[in-house]
Each structure stands twice: as C-alpha cells, then as structure tokens.
Length: 80
Image (cartoon, rainbow, N blue to C red):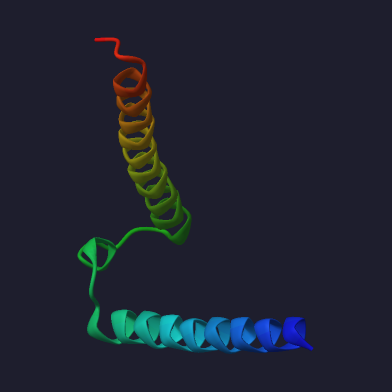
C-alpha cells in the first residue's frame, strides 16, 4: 500500500513538472526568447549548436564536481 502512495505522489510530481516545462517552452517560443532566435539558421545547425552548448555546460559542471570531490578526498587524507 505504501508503494502505491509513493508511486502516486511521484507520478503527480512528474506530471506537474512536465506540464510546467511544456508551458515554459511554449512561452519561450512565443516570446522568441533565447540566443538561437536572434539568427536565422537551418534546423540541423540550430540542433547542433544546442547540443554542443549543452555538452560544453555539462563538461564544465562535471569538471567542477570532480575537482570538488578531489579536494574533499585530499582534505580527508591530509594531503596537499
């Protein structure tokens, strides 16, 4: 019975966040918000630029995470 409640709450939260995300994307498209709306490019090039930008952001985020984990291990072991 408890797992049904957890599933229901999780499904409800996912539904709300999903609908909110769709609303944000519709608003972004209607307001022409974002860097890719400033220039007229072919769709394949816009997708390529977006994927490369997200990959670059992920690499930066991951490098900060790895660096902070390495610093935490060095602090725990007393190495400099």
